[in-house]
Amino acid sequence: MDVGTIGFIGTGTITDAMVRGLLTNPAAVSLVTISPRNAKIARALADDFAEVSIAADNQAVIDASDMVVLAVRPQIAKDVLSGLTFRKGQFVVSVIAATNRKTLLERIGADVHLVQAIPLPFVADREGVTAVFPPDAHVAALFSVLGTAVECESEDEYDLLAAASSLMSTVLGIMDVSAAWLEQRGLAKGKGRAYIAPLFASLSQTALRSDTVTLEELSGEFATKGGLNEQVLSDFHQNGGRDALILALERVLARIKGA
Ligand SMILES: NC(=O)c1ccc[n+]([C@@H]2O[C@H](COP(=O)([O-])OP(=O)(O)OC[C@H]3O[C@@H](n4cnc5c(N)ncnc54)[C@H](OP(=O)(O)O)[C@@H]3O)[C@@H](O)[C@H]2O)c1
Image (cartoon, rainbow, N blue to C red):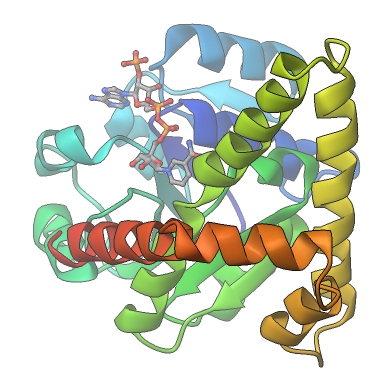
């Protein structure tokens, strides 16, 4: 893969994860320019990787890079972008959440090659699944190094995957509530988590491996008629668990669409 030189505006959690993933041996890029904020993260990246240099400011990142990744929080994107000048046709990858293509292009104010992406923290270990819109061979190649790239054909598809990516805290929250309940009921401290985490990992592996079997069928396979799994699934549905999940997804999609 060759994306040329790559730069990051906003050196926070997701930039840290992407840069570490890209520069894991063997490095996928030869030169990475990062903006000076956050100073601590920028310093740590520059100390850890010879390929990283800290630019004087955001404009210097753009000037030094073939591909620029925008990784600031949505609330400040307008202020950050308004003072910057991009080159015509420059590759710009926005990972800024809940900010659509039209808004981004207005704020960038130049005729750039804009692609949006949703990298997740797992990219640091080259294990992330990243939604990309619109489909783009260069950007898909970049995120394929960092795990798996899923190219979206439409903004609607991309928004739906953004909604799905918002489930991370909830899934960990289900693990947390379950592990805490186990300990509250008498399981030795730490054992709940030690059991729950591999259980969820095995279920994810099953879903990944059995991609010709629908998830509904898989769920059914684990729910023996009259058995314990069937009872918990039924209780979960009857007590509003499914409705709460669908409502949360609808509400986060509305928020994403409203951007
Ligand atoms: N974290 C994730 O898992 C994730 C996943 C996908 C997408 N995203 C999106 O990626 C973007 C960044 O998220 P994050 O989690 O990395 O946030 P973050 O950790 O808060 O990082 C944002 C960075 O922007 C810096 N910054 C603030 N003002 C700036 C300016 N004027 N110019 C340049 N940089 C400036 C901040 O520096 P200071 O600390 O000095 O203020 C901070 O380092 C957000 O839009 C988020 O929605 C995040």
